[in-house]
Amino acid sequence: MATLPTPSQYWAAMYLAKIAYTSETDLAAQRAAIEAALQTAEPSDLAPWKLIWGPATDQGILAYIAQSSVTSTYALVFRGSLSELVAQDFIRNWFEDADVLKQVPFNFPESAGAHISSGANMAFGSIQGLVDPITQQKIPAFIEQLAGKSASPLTLIIAGHSLGGGLTQIGALWLHAQLSPAAQAKITFLPCTFAAPTFGNQQFADLYDETFPNAYRAVNTLDIVPMAFENLDGIQKAYSPTGETISESGLGLDAIVQTAKDSIGNVYRSPKGGAVLSFTGWMPPTVAQWSEIVATNHASQLYLDKVQTAAANAINRT
Image (cartoon, rainbow, N blue to C red; front, side):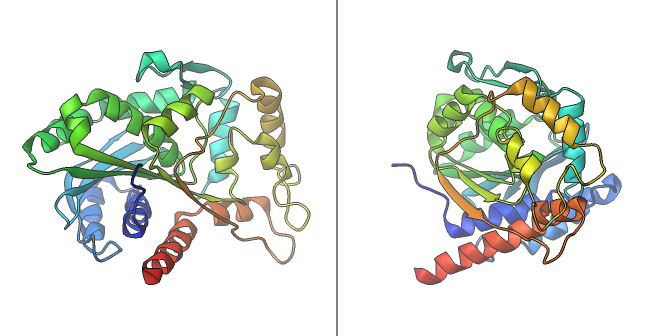
């Protein structure tokens, strides 16, 4: 039976995912800021973390690799191209540009019959090309080298929030397929996603669940990003009756969602295996703007608070 992430591991995963937003608009200061944040990461039994690869960016996509004070534990962290605070822009970018109206093959492995959205595939192309500015190594080569040099088994947490969560699913499968059988056997993969959208078809979801039966995911039932793209009806109905709905927002997004809903049907399916933390976020006591409810429920800090509480409660029970 696959070993699920421990409370400390999934707590650390969300903390590390939040760190990926550090100095998002100040690339010159980004490396030093991430290094400083890793020193004080929670929980303390896995910290401090040391930056050993990256950060590397392309088209706004970011990844970094860190090593825990528990020397056999590593983390590969992904950040998507959009700020965590503008989830409504997620709809414009991934619906309006027809990125989800077309699916393309995901060939890792090809025999699985998995497909992902063309927009996700473009982001995946950025991941494949990322190079560490110091070692000049891409992600698979660096991880392969870590496994080869280690005399003992390794744990690799793979984490991301929002678009980074979707890229975690894609990136974890791709990385696993790129490694040698010896490296695969030495590494315990622990994918942890937070607020991840659905980027693939049923075969992709099945492939992820079969490859990583120990995956962890956290989902806020009031967050619209995890509803995309499997539950477009949920996006349209969210926050009714006490909150402003998408059609009432005046942002012109309801028509975009409806067009996608009519066009893609039920071709997107989310992974269902592993462990899940499902929680209900914030609804205003009186009518609030749709964008405010969206931003509050998608924020990485809210996810970190909920994950931290769940982890602390689990640790205290042991």
